[in-house]
Length: 268
View 1: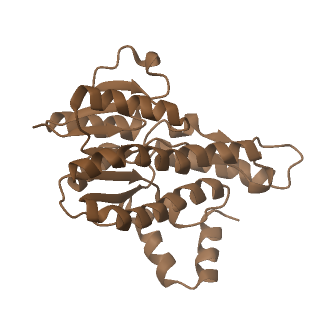
View 2 (view 1 turned 90 degrees about the vertical axis):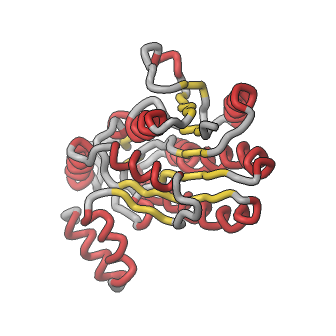
């Protein structure tokens, strides 16, 4: 019997790449979008409406999958939003929105699917976080915090649900060639801002990293391997060597030395 997979944020980028690969491997895939009507020509897999910031929307989408398939075997919490800016100048409303999408939303989706997985006595949940979630990056502090918090939530929930036959893992991508920069919230570069020059340069550098990032197919391959692993690890990292190595350096270097390394890298 084909395993049923739900991928939040499945209409483009990493989510779409994962869905396409899983369909090729024989999985039944449901991707989600806040506005699936925008993708009338989307044929890669089933695309349904789901807004991770809206509990009613989550419940409705999940109920439609259970009505059609009778089960859910894999949840891939991929929906996320980027946000940049000096924390001092980032509007509170945008900070809340980022946490709603990157942290509270994935938690709400997991809470929706866990009773079904518990009844099945099986299930895989994979939370897509970020290598940025392992460190506080300048001008990306809110994004780092929201993804880092999801890493810790996953660690805790993984222990809570293991006795029900449910496995949870994190997979943290580095920079990938997706459209995340287009949808990212950028705090405006204010002419009178004390951060103006540095932040402006940082924006250009961040966008160039995304444009020259790795192929999302690498993430799809990694997710497939996790799904096919009976006892997955807690943390997986996917990306360029130096991006992954930066996590190792954070573990072994003194805090101030690591901070200096980051500041030198970002020319601060």
